Image (cartoon, rainbow, N blue to C red):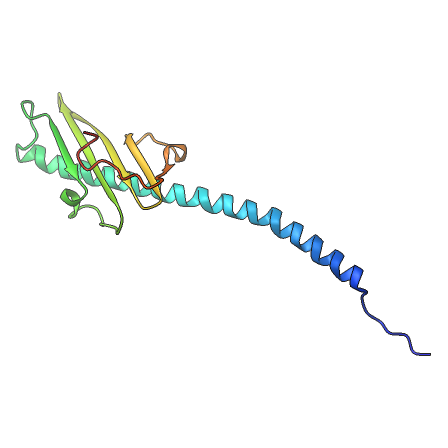
Length: 142
């Protein structure tokens, strides 16, 4: 008599169920990590946006466009085209306030997926929110 070697249907189903559970648990972790990485990337883009505004503001201070009497300036995303790579679906603005030789910067930036509103460079990844269809202010929060 010849014996057949192989797996029964029950054994195969058990293996498939175990693999499905492993994939479900691992998948949730991977998607969570990917979401955090995307938010971190958007945060870094926001910081680059603020840096671009800082550079533009320094030029405007030297040229007298920002001074003690004109101490606030709002830059839209398009105003910073020479300093910041424009990306499809992004909107935003940056407010620069100049006082006693120092300036403070706050910004608003959104993509099709994320939004940051009224923040400076001390923001964390937790400050990055889902945009839910909202667009960032193009007029410095006004």
